[in-house]
Image: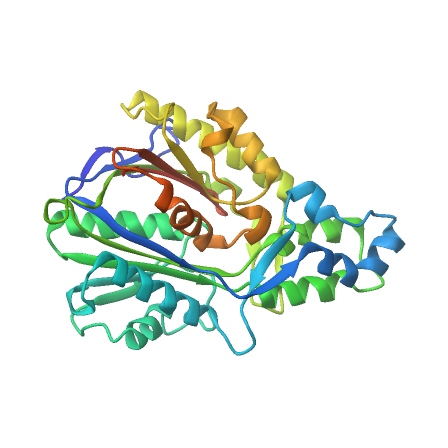
Length: 357
C-alpha cells in the first residue's frame, strides 16, 4: 500500500498537517490531450456584452486584460466532452502501448456531466470497449479531480489491485457560457453581476487522458513519487457552480486570496515533511489567469520561466487544464527532469504531485 507519512486530514488542533502520500511502484506511462476544433475569442464575449459594458461604463477587453485570456476552445457542432475524453484515451493507450484488455481501472475526473447518474465513466468505458473486470467510476473535486484520480490510481497500483489504470477528463463549459451571457445581458445587470460571472467566461473546453502502470515493469515510464494535499473547506462558498441554467457564481478575489494562502501553507508544511521542490525543472500548474500565476510565483518563490502557460489560448479547462498542459509539455521533457503538478480547486483544496520524468 502507499505509505502515509502524515495524517490524511487536518483537525482544528492540528492546523499544520498535510495529507502526504508516497508511492512505491507507480509510473505515468503516457499523457495525451484532445483539443476542440472551434476557437472562441474573448472579443466574441465582448461583442455579446457590448450593451451591458456601455451601460455600466465598463471597458471592453476585461477578459484579455485582467485574466490574460485571448481565446479558448469549443467543441464542434454535435461533438461532446465525452467524445473528447474517448479520443484522448485512445491516444494515451496507443502511446503507452497498453492493450485495453489490460486496463483494470478507469477513473473519469471531469467537472462536466450531462446527468447526475449514471457516472460519466460508464459511457467512456463502453465506448472504449474496456473489459468487464475494469473498475470504473467518477472522481469529482472541481479542478483537482485529475490529480486526485492519479493519486487513487497510483495507490491501487502500489497495492497490487490493478496493473494498469486509465484516467480521463473531458470538459465543456459552453452551457455555463450561455447562462452567463443571458444573465449579463439583462437590463438590471450590475457591476457585481459582471464580477460574479467573470470566471465563467474564462473557462474553455478540452480533454485529457493518462495511462498509469507499474514502474518496475516499465522502466521507460515516469515515476510518480507522491503527492501532498491540504483542505481549506471553510472557503467552500467562494465558487459554486450549479446546473447549466443556474450558472456559476465566483468570488474571484476571495478565491485568489485564500487559494494562494492554502498553497503556501501546503508548500511550507511539505518542505518540513522532507519534500524539496524549490528547484524543479517544470511546475505544471492549474491554468487560471495571469493574476493567479503571478501570485503563485510570489507565494512560493518559483521561477517564472519554469511555469508553462496554456490559459492564454485554452482558458481554464477545469479538471483537464493541468493534464492538458502536461501533455503539451511532455515532448520537451527529458529523462531525470523533476516535474511538480500544482493545483487549487474550488472548495477549497490544493494538491501538489511530484513526477520523476
